Length: 277
Length: 274
Image (cartoon, each protein chain N blue to C red):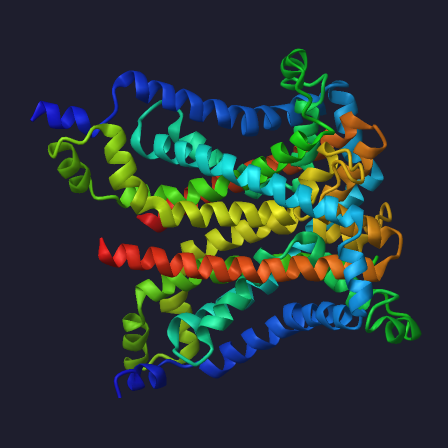
């Protein structure tokens, strides 16, 4: 009995597991099953009409596209920020490192009005972009900006610990074998950080797909143009179109489960990478 | 040897350029918007800033936000402790699935999280007719706001504690039991001191999200001023009324809370790694 003693010595298993499961059922699982139950009572034709209406398709397209672009921007710049924070020393580094988590700590409505103020045509940054013919606020670009803000910490925080733990010897070996810096980065470093980078990308994408608060102010909420999928759910609820809202929400719920599955697979992959290294 | 060390880091010009681009990105997306909150808050003077904060509906919104945090933080901390004890100390079938389920609220859009409670307790919801018949209001009332806040903050403490407790192992706890400590004594004298920084870290994050949740709370609130308006929702209402200075004044209080969270998180995070 290898695990036997440990299992019986420690007390409180029944109490803690019982409490955990009851709490989770009452607060999360039973309410969630309500959505599934509600969605399954919609006829197939009604469901299809709700999620494939021209307005819904436009919203899906914008949400997927803007979340994708924002996640790519975050993958590139997040990797760069993580690299600079881990590898270089400069004044204020600790403070900047701490501020990377600001999008997690700041209420999304505050982020939303701040980004709108900064990127509107009269705002501090919007004013600089206007002469170049770039309008950010109340356009699709504004949606991308808000979603980039909200996903910023994910890639940095996923990649940072992996960069810190990288074995300097591997880089030494590559260098002494004659690789230049870029070759070392591409052939040696990038493969080791790939799982973390992909995990960060997926988390940023998922967060952006479901984001509401920071987008609602900067997007202008024009149906067919700048209305994201979460705004469509809210718009349908405000019109008491519960069927339409539930149909779209159940598709988003499916996407959430897909994301959880992807993250679990990515983490298993990075554990294998870690075990091999 | 020098050739090899040269090839191990980038030339100064590249290092400088990469740092500049990274900082430029953070300035445009983080620091300028953060500064804008405080500058806009004082755009109409210190007096109007103060008036926007002490205005009765603003105070009611801040009180409701504090109340939501006061309910969600202790309950989800208790849940996190129980879940971490069960999941980090025992092996049982379905353990992996349970860990995934705890993380579920993080993967769900705030809008869907709010909708969940509307479909359950709303007038059109599954329990709607029964609740109406008994005169109980959950959605578009304070209970709905508390439920939505609790829902979105379920995972915070558990996900900080589980990896820490797994790494620590249970030798010290078993030793305490072998020396005759009761289960409760072992938890108070051994487990709790060992996990205190990770616990605090989780509580700090949980508290920040409970204060700042917007999407889920917005769906269940009904936006009744002075009654079901939390501080993040009050910011939205003021902004939509073109009362920008007041919106940013309330926003600045929330931004200060966010900055305090980042400071606490950094300090506590250092204690964990020590």
